[in-house]
Image (cartoon, rainbow, N blue to C red; front, side, top):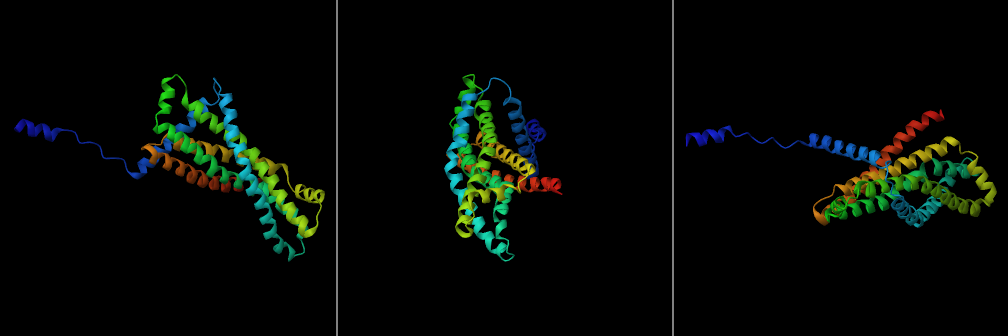
Length: 269
């Protein structure tokens, strides 16, 4: 009895579970490993061109209708709301320039990113989450297929490629909405409107908008893939993965927007 009691007292105690701060750092390290693995595998052969093109179609073409409607309404409403302020100073002729600069610099990339975060991010998170909980990803590994390259690499690259295209398309559609409002109220011709709208846009504005669109596309896809790739607990986990993908991507888009504005404002001074 004494020996048994001594053995019980000498048994090693299990380590306490990590705290919230430790879990946060562990999660941050997992995200870093996930992103590093993407850059390691996405640009090495074999390349999944067929799947990449399919994802570009899914992310880009299927988002055109929603982005067209939103961009057109945004351009029209922004012009209508800006007119009273400019009319107080007799500067309604500046409306095309104001709309062009606002759309290209901020509204088009941000609007496209937020719409894509809700549509594309949730779709990626739910799709990969359902494949994870149904063990389809494990089956791909057994069949000698690299699921990370096929599922994650193609989606992140497709979103990064298509987001700048969708951003400039949103800016164009938004300017069409502004043109309709300006032509009805001021009688401005189409040529005059676009000349005034484009003469204030610089190459720096185009470069800044492109960089922001690339960052937004990468963020949306990598967040959606990470949440879906690490989902669990059946259908409940799939729903949480889709919801987390949208919320996290939108939050990061706003953070990146603030950082980009601060950086590019240094070049405008």
